[in-house]
Image (cartoon, rainbow, N blue to C red):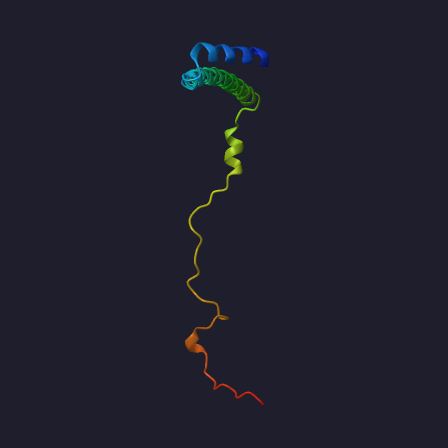
Amino acid sequence: MFDVAPTELLLVAIVALLVIGPKDLPRAMRFVGQWVARARGVARHFRSGIDEMIRQAELEEMEKKWAAENERIMREHPAQPEMIEGEMIPLGGPPEVPTTTDASVAAPNDIEAEPAKTPLP
């Protein structure tokens, strides 16, 4: 971001130590750090706002392209209602349930009970 060499940073630290003094230097550095953090926050907020505007512009451009492509496809292949109706099968009503039972299915009362056979040893 800034071109500050280590020697320049050391020179600034020595001048700050001489001008501010060792007693007030930590408080001054904290104050400078808070202002740097605020400046970074403002820059980050500004950058994110710009990025969001760019993203919205790109999204709108893509939506326009998709709408144009969709319109072109719909013009080339118009819907044909007679084909659509011919492909559909009418369902009618619910399926019929048989009211009589088959002869192979016997009711439980119709079965003659036989005594159980004793198993062989």
